[in-house]
Length: 158
Image (cartoon, rainbow, N blue to C red; front, side, top):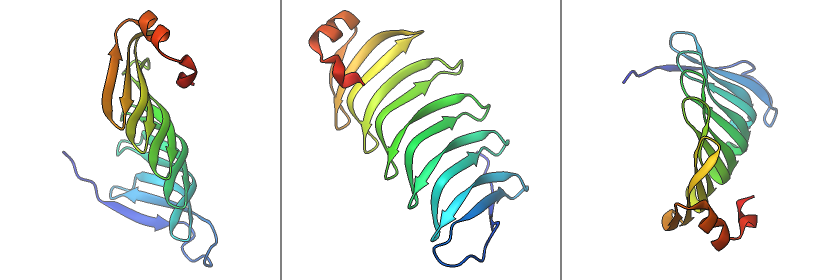
């Protein structure tokens, strides 16, 4: 495992209290590690983080220092790895996860970073398995999608 030293640099370091400014953080080799907006020493608005090789690692919005809204996460070769909603820094609502060729492998409902609701597992574009979780614990699993749809209210899958 390689360790990287990160150097911090704010483009506009001396701003009046409460004023928003753009900030960039660099790896020791001078490559950019992340960039985005800061207000009252907290990340706000849109941010992009980079792998050490320069590829985008993840991007999304902050509010008062917490991840908010929709985020995208990428592998170090630039492929989409996962995406989903955040609320106060925790994964919430639906999250989607992808394989190396960009196909969805599963989607899960999350609450406070924990599986809470349904998880759908895909092969190609077909759902091959479904599970229901309650606070991170698997409650039930279906390997037949027809049985799953018959036994569940699909309105919960939105």
